Image 1 (tube, rainbow, N blue to C red):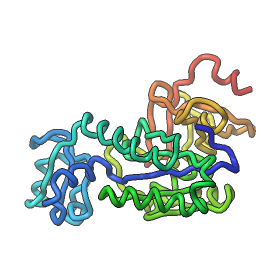
Image 2 (cartoon, one colour):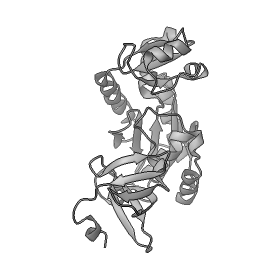
Image 3 (cartoon, rainbow, N blue to C red):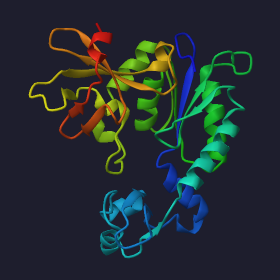
Length: 276
C-alpha cells in the first residue's frame, strides 16, 4: 500500500478485538466483569479484560484463579486463533466497500489500514469517508476508533490512543498529535505486547554491549519508502549524529522492555554498513 502525501490513509482500530468477539458471542455477559483467557483452567493466563473487570483489580497477566478471587462473578472464555482469523477475514471483506486496498495488521488483530487514494469522487471529504467506515463498524456492533491521516504510523498511534474518529488536515498536524499521545492513556496490553509508538525514545543496545548504540528517534514502515507493507523499522539516532535503521523483527530486536525504555538488538552482519 502506498502511503505518501497527499494521499489519505485510514487506520481502523477495534480495541481489545478478542474481547469484543467474546462479547458478541456471549452478549448476555455485557453487564458483567469479563475476561479472555488463554485456557479455561485455573492456571490459564488472563489476556484481555473489560472495564468492569478492571474495577475489581483484574488485569491482563493474572492467572484465571487469581482473577476469580478478585471478582467472584467474573465471566471468562477462550477465543481461538481460528475465530480471530475468521473475523479478520470477514471484516477485511466488508471494508473493501470503502477502499480497494485494505490491509489487516498481521501483528495486532483488529487493526486495519485503508488507502483513500482515488476516492474523492465517492466521498465529499476525508471526514465523510472516515465517518462512513466508522458507522459501518458500529453497525457491526464493534467499538471502534479511527484516524484518517497520511502515514501508517501516525494514524495507528492516534487510533490506538484516542476514542472515536480523528481526521487530520495535514501531515504536520498528524505528526504532532502522534508524538503527544501519552503512554499513560494507553489500554494495558497483555504481557509481551507493546504499542509500536511506545518504542520512541527507547535506548538501543547491541546484545551484550555496555554502551547504547543510540536512541529510537522514529518508527517507520518500509511501505512509507516503497517497501513491503507493515514491515516496521526503528530509526535509531546514534551519538555521532548518524542514523541506523533496524528492522523490528523478533530475531533482531531480541529484548524489548518498554518500562525500562531499553531494547537489545542482535544486529545481522553488515547491517551497519548498509546504513552508511
